[in-house]
Image (cartoon, rainbow, N blue to C red):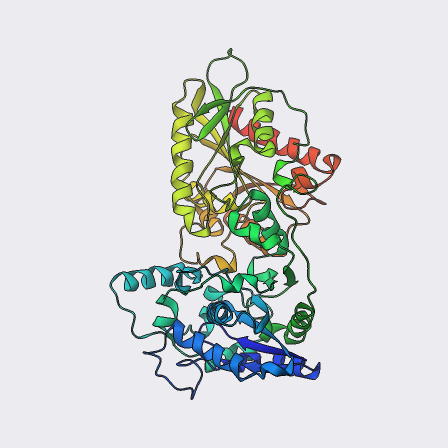
Length: 508
């Protein structure tokens, strides 16, 4: 018999696990939902005094209550914030724990408080300031009914369940978010399973991409003791699909799940595969964080197309994006059309880095426009994937020299788990101010539902305000179709989009 010990996330208590616990028990499991001090109603310790260490002790108490001589294996499940006390407890009782399940949560590290994983960046900033001032007492008020989305996607949660979640929500003691997690490293010996909720913006393929980029934090996820599952739902699967969650937890306890491929194993990762078109082998001219591909030495000043990569991309990724075959291919294709093709590196290493990445893109644009080979009054910007939010500034206040804005399989609104609700990086809102700026949008027909929803919202907003939007579709294309799909499927749309951009740059 497996013993499942379930630990809930911020503002929530044992009540969220009722349906999932019943399913696990019906399948023969023993289930304990941990009442966390200062959060669960009636549990001792005033919320003002509860901290992360308090909650670690709460979990340890449940572990110690399980008869060690019974031979029953313990699986610890941490949802959201709950993974922090779970890891703290497993680190002190590694021999007692058979597996740790990360349920749609971050990967906490030693010495880092849980506030680092708070998705609402406005709240996170306020907590950082309170920590800086040494104000660790008190509690954070729970969200109102219409504010849960700021803490994770509510996709799949019924109105009744959302009403109940709101009614039973409790203030979160600040000490639980501000006190650093302390790990000795013993927990590293415990097998782990990640359960990713795709409607909240994370998938196994996305994690595999981080491994392929060379992110050292992700490299450990390729070990034989690590497995993954996906659930096509939002951030609260215990409310949206409790039976499916229970099934996944049972399979995780049995050691099932998908394994990740180590970086460099097998075929090259998608971002390092060849560009699908034959393009001239022009040399690059490297200027700071910018590379220019210039078509010959004749012809005076030429229009420029600046290609802005997506992300987040780990800071240590090699090669850096401006040397990826896809971006180099696009730049050389632009040069074959008589333009100056430009690639660049920007510092979008985390969701919190959009401000810094936007500044890097602006600096790159200024460098390119100042180049004597470039017609400073004829420039196009072309964004990819997670670079999509960076279009917002250019859509909101398009300068006269910006003759076209293009985007391929872009993310055009913050995803639910990004916490960027109040940020300026919202192209869906910015397009209303685009005026006469031509916009070329390349859509992947097999885009992930979460990203496709942002594209659909953008298209609707563009149509409502009469923006000059041209749609170029790759019906069978996936996100990153240039290197994932058959060239014959992608070439026509790729060439069409490039020639549209060139037409806007060269027309009077």
